Image 1 (cartoon, rainbow, N blue to C red):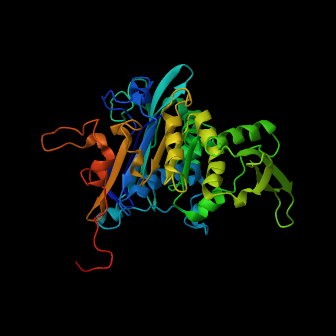
Image 2: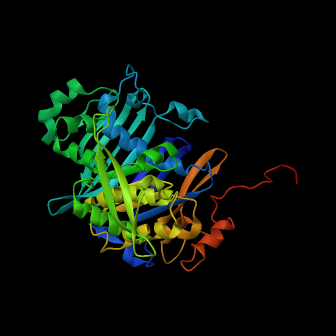
Image 3: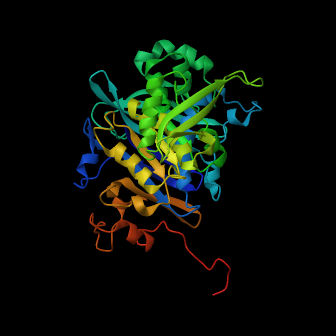
Length: 418
């Protein structure tokens, strides 16, 4: 499970930002807490803020880190494809633009019966990797603990430090490692177990930007895996859809070959029960945008929950009724439905989820921008002039909309004037 995601000098964040998934000492909604090793960890984080405050920058920072880990072997200044060129979007309104951006994850992974705390991070510029490290411990998830054992530590213009167990790979690494390449990416390609585990951790994450309408349209046309050949998959999909639309009683999938495509294409139909007891068939394209999105979400939610991964989504609730989104949140916070400790992190504007019976204070986060600089903090971090925290029985939604927690838009007359 993810303990912390840290980044600095990225997009609208000039300084440091830490999304902490560890639970505070509060006893509110204690059923949400997952215990691993010595840590109490949360399954959900909701991130709020005004338009252009930097909510999406938190998402994009994690997305960038995952993209680098997956693709840095292909990074090259000579590569004509933009998607394969290193492009670090550092903070642009100060001298920070000349400094490296930094990214770090702290997480717990299971090695046999033993739970290990890992920390992995790097500092990077458009010129290449400035620093990169991977370390582990059996006691705590905080990197700065002196007991951490480094698997490797790499610094620009310094000798590469490798754990003695990896010395046999040193020659291959030094020959193959480019300044734009992350050592974790190279190590995974060289089949080094410790580095493959890091890359596999990122592979278990689903990072989806629903605020991008083009990607949203593409995402809604993804067919759940094996839905065309497995009756069981289709039946489970229908049960999932019935959780929000019980008029759909079946799904039909027709495969056809397209002359201009190498892969087969599919047409999906939903079978509805009508009021006179008959059935009617509709093309999925004729269904509501919410139904199409939930159809597409099925495989993502299934994978994340089965693998115990992370689902990090920008504006996940676009096109979804708040009660549907509430049902998703209840799934992730329910220990029986989420047996593998999957985690959901999402940005949103919908304040209906600010409910003391749905989310803990340390599961509600805010991004506020002041003078062009974004700041990330949780509801649990907020204190009044007496140093008192927000009460756990407060009306979070009301106080947020009144501006008591910050991270709300500054409103003026849209047409000007008084």
